[in-house]
Length: 446
Image (tube, rainbow, N blue to C red; front, side, top):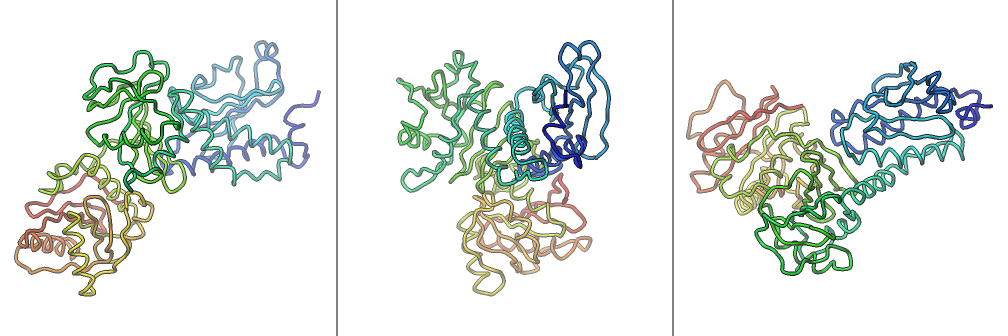
């Protein structure tokens, strides 16, 4: 009997090992589309059965397995008698066809959208190979569609959450404004024991959370903010509002604006949608603690605003040169932007939100001068030359970037304007400069 792999490849110039490497390379590419930081891509392994072996024969004689890792082209070959001998088999995606198998272990524990994305990817890839031949595979144009289908299936299967409805909600306005809200959703198997306590506000009659009730759901989102979240309960209905954090079996949806949202599930996994595609980011513990490091500015900011500012600052650290980010209230930033522009001391740009458009932050901070953002992450000024009187002591140990920021912040304080400067030096250090103190942030430029 001809081996399944040979039938599938149907090309004597292309070996099974070549096919395995090709699958690995396509899989790496789709993960690169998903992860914002390439360092976050799991060091997955793919296991291919080398030969066509029935279950009975495999249990007796074993299976010959080829294993390929993400980071090298060396194919390891070994024998097993049970698929459970494969590391992390219970959490991997496994495909069977005609007594051959492929196992993707992406180093995840428990449920993961990668299981569904991998399933969609692998089925499409092998369908193309079967129909078009191994050398004529063109799957790049399918990546976003495969990622989307996997994410939609995952969240509906485990949470009965309709991602398409979430997209519609984030694109729907209420009194000309997009939502800036939070929603808590339980795992499906916990529906019957979903929150009945801990609600700050409980609706007398739970309200359906579905597309048929779009206008009312969008209106209710206005009740939610960084302190209160809408709670979905049994039967997929909104039960009320809570000020408590999500439970272990619940996910948190953060709608941040037009077609922009985050989902945090299992406590630390995060999937986001912005700029027209999905992103996976590791929800790492913040190292900035901006609440403590923005001086008197922080007293007026919500947790959501602080998180957004942290996002912009972390993006700025990705560029290799030093820079300055000057943060102030919307009124003070608008006023200073106008003044500096009129004095030809900055480059004025149309208002843009840098948390939503975070991918351009490294570019905007790559030129000399300061970038101004307000506490909502809006920017209208880049490359600004900071001015001010030399009215206080600087530091000869630090460069012009640090000292000009110190002078500017103190001069603005004399004019009753509160600014905090984030100074990123070429030596890799990052400082928060307020009128009262200078704080070394526990991060470094990448």
